[in-house]
Figure 1 (cartoon, rainbow, N blue to C red):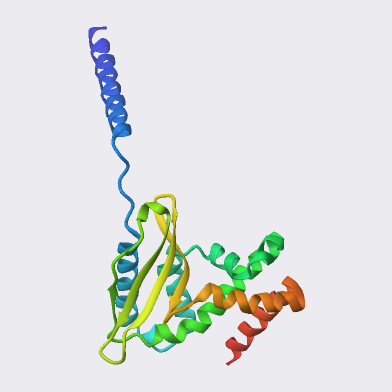
Figure 2 (figure 1 turned 180 degrees about the vertical axis):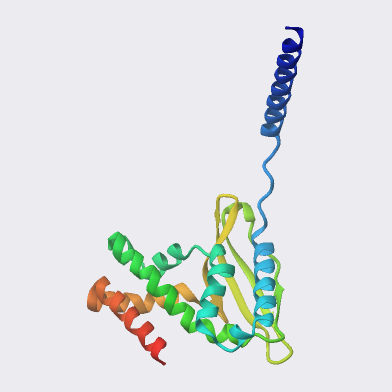
Length: 213
């Protein structure tokens, strides 16, 4: 009986100690989320290093590039938001199936459009610019440059939004041209002329032509 009481008391003390530690942990400030510019620096460096080491990407293997983008880049991109902003008002009018197809076809189009740029990475590195925004705002622009031994630096900026404890990219600026704005103008013309289904069909056809070419 005394042995049983000792065991129960030990377990009770352990439970009390655990409860106390949890209560103390709850009072501690949450760990600071990684700054958006630091995330971009790490992501850019990781992407460049992996491309340099992957001969199939450098050879332009579209399947390998797609796998690489899905594994390395997409986790840091809010692609649904990017698509919604590019489609504009039409996105709110689209049903779930149309939205799903728009995201799929737009992603494929961007992947095929920019896969050539990924395959050209050789001696480039990333150079970050000072973050002018306050990260606590929840929506910032992170500025960077891609520099190499040849040619001038390439401006590459990112619009990022806070998502929980992390940051997600939802727009990209290459040499002063924002991706979302560029495609919004194109998509708006297509929607006005042929509706949402017409835009989806147009994207599908472009992707088919890319695949055949």
